[in-house]
Image (cartoon, rainbow, N blue to C red):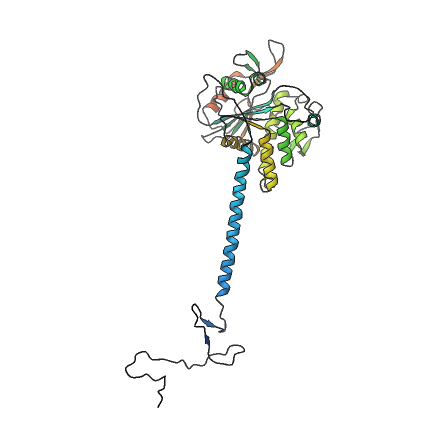
Amino acid sequence: MPTDPSTPRPGRDDAYVVDTRRRPKRAGAGSDVDVVDTREGGGRRGGPGDIPEREPRYRWRKGRTVLIALLVLLLAWIGFMVWVPMQAWGSVNKVDNIPDGERPTDTSGYNYLLVGSDSREGLTKEQRKKYATGNAAGNRTDTIMLVHVSESGGKPVMVSLPRDSYVPIPGHGSNKINAAYSIGGPKLLTNTVEQVTGIHVDGYVEIGLGGFAAVVDSVGGVDLCVARDMKDKLAGIDLKKGCQTLDGGNALGYVRSRHEDPLGDIGRAARQRQFLGALMKKAATPSTVLIPWRYKSFADASAAGLAVGTQTGIMDAVRVLQAMRAVSNDEGLSLSVPTSNLAYRTSGGALAVKWDTERAKALFSALKNDEPLTEPPPGTTVEGAKNS
């Protein structure tokens, strides 16, 4: 007689137990018995409310793929942001600005000489006419600034040294400070600044007229407020009072103009600091940084018009740019060397700018010793020049 498989057999511990409780039928199924998937990794299929294992696994794999793709794009973007300035830096012109002989002691903080040259090199005949630069030969400086980056917690400082400042030029007597550049280029200019200020210059950055205009155009122009109507044929501008966007040509005229400025060289120096700050502010906006072709165009244009000292590295240039940006955001100090006479008559009969010796020494001493400046020292701002 056949043995009932549900009845345990004597001497056997491995009895089979059958669940005879009635279970709900699956939709469309004709059996009360669940179907069990006996394949490896399988489980019950088709029960009410059951969710197939493939769906969450598929979603996880899809999410991981998207995450990896985003990570790759982010790394590629970071690589691009680093590669562009490094590639541009490789094409920057290097000049010898290191003075011979004894130099001031190198102290805390970083001090850079920022120079705007009025060299016409690189400008076409049409550009010279468009920008009203003329055809003057030789090199002179329209802009001379000392940029100080503190290591003691002070604000970054930009100090204009008016181009007509009457100072001793090593080996050439006393003359306007821009004559040092005309006579001996970056090396003599650096030597002159070091000897008259007592400050060790850590780096040298120079930009020419053509390069300046190209940089402005590469960021789509620069926004700033013009304090008054400005019409200067020699600078090629006819600007109306008010806030506006200046293209390369108008920007160049704005920083070069001085004959119509009631403060002359001092007023122009203030406008130069104002404009450089505005340029760096525009360069750091998303419209420049997040648009690849504009970002690369800005870097390439900057490099094309730039010259740096042989011992000036890319981090030095970055510190100068950051200082200019800080000034534009009112997080830095925009100063002019203290003066006592804006129409000083030299022994040769020329008009020059005479410094206020005591106040100038106090300013340069503070910078040399890296004293944390948070407010403009006495005499470093000129009434009427701040918003020129």
